[in-house]
Length: 322
Image (cartoon, rainbow, N blue to C red; front, top):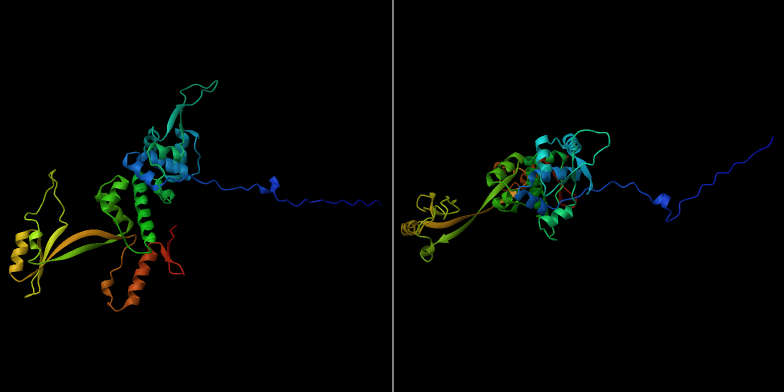
């Protein structure tokens, strides 16, 4: 019997072999810097920004032309966006370029509009952001359901980033600045804090008032500004009576301080400073003894864990949320 030997030769891949160097890399989505997001929100481009963020999150690239129906189905199925939100977003000519689709032979009816996905660099140049460095906060799919959820998500990520950058300590920031970056009111920012479970601690500055400096206090209390708007009471007098241990507050005016000093009372000028903010609900430590440091630490750690913050073995903290 004739025996036939068949040999299989397998060539091993060599360095530089194109056949074995091809990698199936996952596409990288575009990322908008926070400074650009804030500028677009302040200039009332909120609807177009949310739609664009959704397309970027799904790794659509620049210069792609898509119909309204295509964008609507994609954004509805992935993020739950409403038709009205997508329609308003695509009507923003600053973000999306629009043109008629080419006609198809034998097909009747109006030609649909096509919308072009812009590159982030185009928007940076359009809103004159320059080359200023700005961080990028990662968002979730649920954050793009509406304009309100998008703004709230940016507010949430700001708290998380500031707290972690400050080495797991509270950070100070003006509420007016928080509201301005999102294009909303201070009242709306407070609502976001309540819905997200954030907390804050007030800060005060006390200056003793004596007969040597009482004359520097204002004669009248300014209740209204030049436009007639009521001014918040950020400065007041704290009066302490050493005879009965009582203390009370008075408007910060000169004659009230002078009168209290002549009566032998202690006078302090109190100024309300910027709050200290935390991205979680601070526990009530007053229920523990002041010397019980372990209970204080455990309560603080539990509150942080419930908010998604966990401690590294080296002592640092990180954020992890589904």
